[in-house]
Image 1: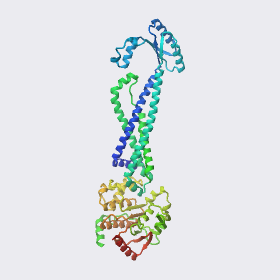
Image 2: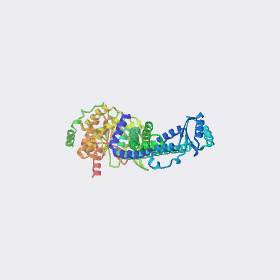
Image 3: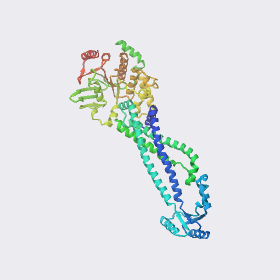
Length: 293
Length: 269
């Protein structure tokens, strides 16, 4: 059977049973929306992790009443280390101002007294400082007299990394669930289509149609249903993204330091192709179970 | 009956035998090469009660054979064994020298491409157009679309439905639907045409029309096996007659033909 005949028969079947296919596609769109939303979250968490993972930074909180001379001396020592790229001194007033700028919550927190914000040395490290060396620097800095606390943000990164890992796992599980859902929905749709077209199948068989000739349009229909549903859900997510990014995009960027982005076209293409493959598989399983040619 | 035949000729006016593509007319004498041979065929649907018993039948190329017998006698089963809807339980069926019973499942479609099968219930797809119903037999053979158009048009012309390819098959009358089914069966120019009670759902006038159409197809060189229990058709056309009675196949002589007609009439009444 040539592909053009199979495609034209699939097209005719689509038009004949368009309500059945529309219902199936609508069900699948919901499943793909869940997957797409998770992929969207994973993509943005990934960006946050990349952004903050690459920014090797330490905050050196100083004890109250530290002399300016001690601060200058400490700054000089730090700048002489090969692992340190830059050191910036933040007074309590400067720290308060920076915090209020970043949080975009001026109205609530503006009344906090300046003393709440400790003075600090913000240290930017060079790229690629090994984990062991970084730990040694932190240990030594913690032993210095004017230092109250050293914040390496490692705990935060670990939390972010575990959150990202959990999101990836969720996306994988969800992808598997969506695949099962697509296969089940299309299997059921094809089963109904087989019942609806039993006369047609009988005629084809009587006219000498091979198994492939009878089955191929069903497989094409399943693949089209899966890929169209995936494509449609991505388009819906894009619309939702356009609306949401306009409203919360700035806040997100301020809080996380990265702008809200949609997942890459490659991931979108993979979802569409995956949807088509799952649809074809569902169709084949249904044909195997319900169509004896 | 003469009147019926005349009216038929008028109603199928376009389908005169001279119109049809003439094949080399096969010799149907006893020395001719057989197209179908059934040897000691048995078929059981219930244990110990054979539907067909020791069936021996030889049909030559170019023959027109009526298969008759009361309802449930096994006429349809006989045809179903030929197109491999069912398989014989013993014996063999040779179609063009090949044992149909020994075909693998994947070979059955290729057997059916050499057969045209027509049913009492037409088996056409009502939501398809007339053209699509006929064209499907050629699509299966992967024939180019351009050729499909011309051959379908020709087949529709042969059955008296020229220019009606775009009509919905479901909108046609019973007789016209059966003509579509016949067009689908002959469009591939099969070696053997199997008709299983093709007039069973039609009124007597239309039945004669359809029989005439089969005769015209036969005249063009196609071998036809026509299963019917309609005695008026048996009397209308002097073709070879095979009776199935209690699972046995009996070759009917002219005397038997009249007897068969009377029996059928009695059964029908």
